[in-house]
Image 1 (cartoon, one colour):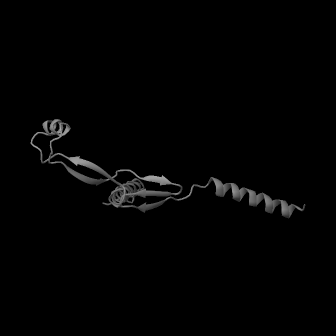
Image 2: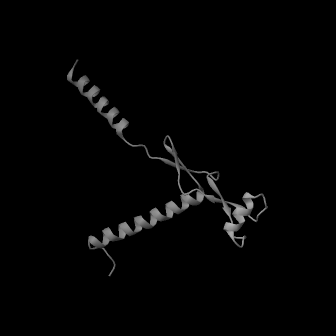
Amino acid sequence: MSEETTLTIDTLLRSMRTIELAPAVPRFIPSAHLVDTIEDWSDCRSPSRAMRRRRQGHRQRVRFVQVPKPDGYRVGNDIFMHPATLQLMQETLSLAMADRIESVAFYRGGGRT
């Protein structure tokens, strides 16, 4: 093999290793199905008494409320999250990045006067 061919194969193998080791950028996919169902006992005068009576078979004023799950699920390279959770995460990250940029600019002398 010539030196030129060896360099090409070497470069190809190096680039393949880089592709394998490079982390893929995850996609965030909103899914309205990711909710938790909780019991709302706020209409009951005494929740503990109502729970006891419920076990005895009496009907109670319990509402079932669906709230967004606070976490996401990673499937391969995709992360599924409830749209409200995703929006909250994006707002939190954008505020954190703005604070970070401002602190770096201030540290370098480019802050506001």
